Every structure is written in C-alpha cells, then in structure tokens.
Image (tube, rainbow, N blue to C red; front, side, top):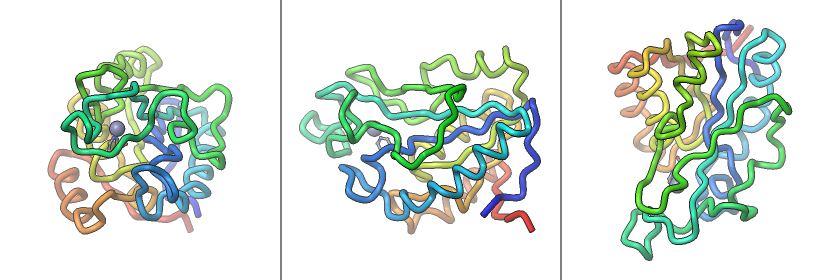
Length: 192
Ligand code: VGL
Ligand code: ZN
C-alpha cells in the first residue's frame, strides 16, 4: 500500500516512535503497531526516491523516568535507553541517511512531540523543509503532539491516518478532528 502523497525535496517524512515497546509484545503495546511497518517502509522508499528527508523519532527514556508508574507517572516502564524495547522495530527499513531523533531523555520531564527540546524544527528549516508528513505511534500521544507542534512551528502538516495506531483506539476519531481543527491535513487516500 502506498498513500497518495507526492514527496519532494521540501518535504520531511517523520516516522514517530516505531519501537518494539510500542508494538505487539512490547511494554506499552499499541494494537496494530507492527502491522504498520510495511506501509511505512513504502512511504520511506517513496520519500527518499523523491529527495525528501526521512526522520525517525524514538522515545528514549532514562531508567527511572518521571513518566513511569513507579515514579507517579501515567505509563509502565517503556523505551528505556539501550534496551531491546527501545530499539526501532526490526522490520523498519530506515536508510542510513535518515535522521534519528531521540526525545524524552530528561529525567523529570516527558516529551511527546519529536520537536520537544530536540531542535528538530530549526534543523528542518535549515534544510529547506516546508512540509512534514507524519505517521507512526501512538496516534493519540506522540503522533498527535508531533503534528500539532509541526503546525505551530509553521510547517504545512500532513498526517497519514492509515499509517498510525492509537493507544486508545476509541479516541482516534476525536484525535483526527482535533488535528484538522489545528490545521493538520489528515489523509486516508491511498495511491491508485
Ligand atoms: C508514547 C506513551 C508514552 C508515544 C511515548 O510514543 O506515543 N506514548 N511515551
Ligand atoms: Zn514514553
């Protein structure tokens, strides 16, 4: 499956947190996470062929991160730095030149957006990027935060809805509406 997107050199495809802990069998598994991999690989391939930038973010927490339940946070222990759970899904075909962005590495602050405290926006502007295309995990947490911040940073923002999965699937429709209201274009269109 390919989404109906014409990538170009002013585009960045941002693959959000396609990590083992967010896929089936992981510590914070999102139903349907692993199934996204082939479709996302097809987008990565199309993006790089067209000269677009490929960015992959990863949740990259220290042991004892503030978002973990034993420290009073909302989440089970997940994506601990250098553990297998924090690794990208083994099927994700990231080209060598893809930009890897680690986030949420501070002890006492969480960061859902790939732009949060990473300087990614400045880097993208420096590279002449004007549009970002977002997919990955989880729709209702880090994908949502990344897309919202992309809009705030002034990028034209497109969400590839079929290539996202939510921690709480019952929230998906509301999330899509919230993103559209904020100026994100949400597409479900598949290439013919
Ligand atoms: C995420 C929950 C906690 C995500 C990260 O990547 O969506 N969700 N940390
Ligand atoms: Zn996290």
